[in-house]
Length: 130
Image (cartoon, rainbow, N blue to C red):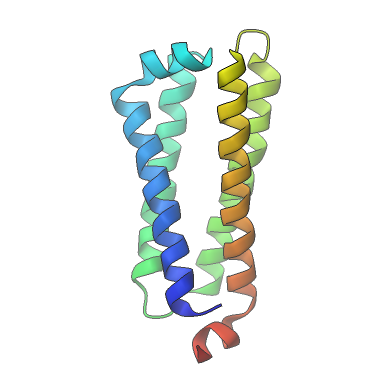
């Protein structure tokens, strides 16, 4: 994977995290009601995403994103995936069908980011040569 592609993936990941942060900050109550989740869970997810987005932007702005930082981001994304399924397990009885579908879909999207980032971090020579 080229450095340019890795940076594009990191920026796309950061943008999605920024969107979740905005939702958690500005619309936790209505989104929580739509998903069948407590507003606090939505808000906490947003704040977590802000921290992740900042790391992603730092990595994307490096001339060659550091492999250790990209791996940390990928591991954080895997944590998000696990937490998403944990939220479904903990709140399934009160979540709406739409809520379960959305949380599942976003977890799978984040898993895709994690896989791409991990693979790119594991191939620094190929990334640097591209």
